[in-house]
Every structure is written in structure tokens, then in C-alpha cells.
Image (cartoon, rainbow, N blue to C red):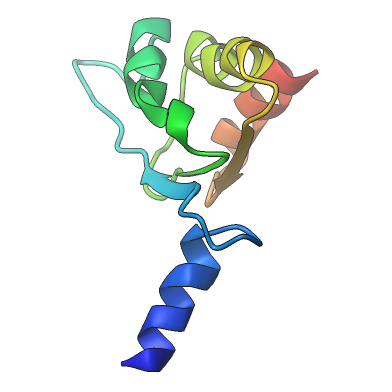
Length: 103
């Protein structure tokens, strides 16, 4: 049991052991297209202000829209410079849009 508790603290807390990190799994919503809008991006980041680090997991997501990536990785990040947004499991298409938003 103790090993499991240590793993939880290591994964979701900072150096002061406060729970300030979260891991969000992005699921692609499809409505006759593989595109995520700016408004959908706002819904994803809604309520994440209480965390210092947010990890977006793009596993299974084939592509995201330019507006979606821009809203999260440029607009949200610029409005919340004290927050850290990370990503994982992004394929080449998603990675292209993320890097485009970051440049």
C-alpha cells in the first residue's frame, strides 16, 4: 500500500507534496470531421487553473485543428504563464499543430 501512495504523490504532486499536477486524456470528438475547435479547447482547459502542471495525453487522437492547438498552447499558456502545459502520445499530425502553436 505504501508503494502505491508514494507513486501517487510522485505523479501528481510537486516538491512540497501539494497536489498541483493533473493528467488529462484528450478524446477526439467527431462530428463528420476530425477537428477540434477553439471552443472545445476552452472546455478542455476549463477548471485547470488550480493545477501548476497539466499533462495532455493525445493517445488515439489522429489530428487536432489549428485553432484547438493555438487556444491551448498559445492563448491559454500566455494567459496563465505560471502554469506548465505538457503533452504526451502526440502523433506527427498532432505534434505538427502543437509546434505550430508554440512558434
